[in-house]
Amino acid sequence: MPTVRDVMSSELVTVQASTMVIEAARTMFSGSAGSALVLDGGKLTGIFTERDIMRALANEPDAGRSSRVARWMTSDPVTIGPNATVGEALDRMLAGHFRHLPVMEGEVVVGIVSMRDLARNIAKK
Image (cartoon, rainbow, N blue to C red; front, side, top):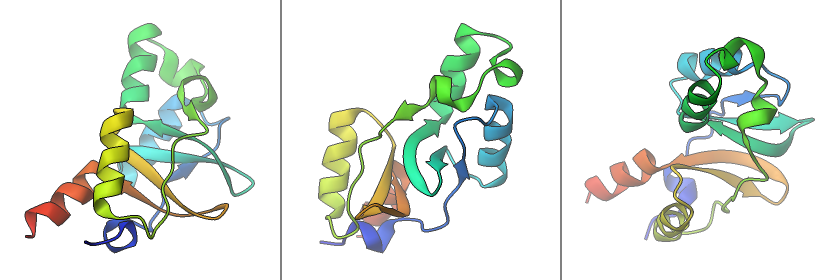
């Protein structure tokens, strides 16, 4: 079975916790990404997703310009290692009800795997 390393993206879209929601949305859009990893000094502190943007705007219509990513992100997100199988990544995503999983090698972020990455891998068979 293929590993997470085989299907993950190593092109990371990142923001800081202090970034305004609108800027994070622009960064995600320009990177064609459904999520942004929140880094502080190179260390993963959270993940900010399309769902977080919707939640922010549903709760505060002006959140894009008045709120920072820190308020809406998921802190200390669930992660997976690059040598885990695609099946393990899928199980972890389904159990946690999320679509993006940061890939860590020790304390270093080496990629991100999405539900779309996993679906593409399955569709190739």
